[in-house]
Length: 187
Image (tube, rainbow, N blue to C red; front, side, top):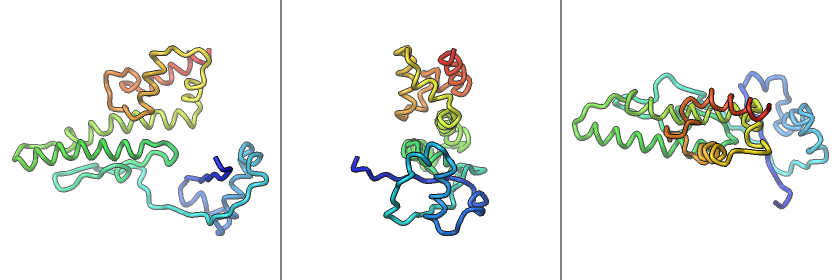
């Protein structure tokens, strides 16, 4: 790296109400509130203006009907740090195309069963791992000193985008299995 990096803060609009309106001042203040960031960024320069992206949906009531299908982050925004967004966008497009083809060929399509349900398998798996990162559960697994190579491969496979592979036991029942694995790693 050339020494330049970026960071951001994600939160509800109400969260930011107690911070300065000036975005650089706000991000500097937020950085000082987290001891690790405060230390790293003590002498940081802020050469670029701070941006703001709003209007993300955390989730929606319906991912699709016979008239529309929400693709990618339009239906379920997980996290700006993890690269799950591109994978979810591609997978949702794949599922939508399969449903649209059937519908255009006069076949009956149940958009919940044929689109939303299979899409949510991967979205929920990614959610488990995103939440696991922030809670420390996934970090306990990733940084475990003596990992089982097969289990490591299954977890890495999910992080690489194979969150819909239901032959992987860490996709099926992802929350329970990741929690159990982290407990084993901690003991």
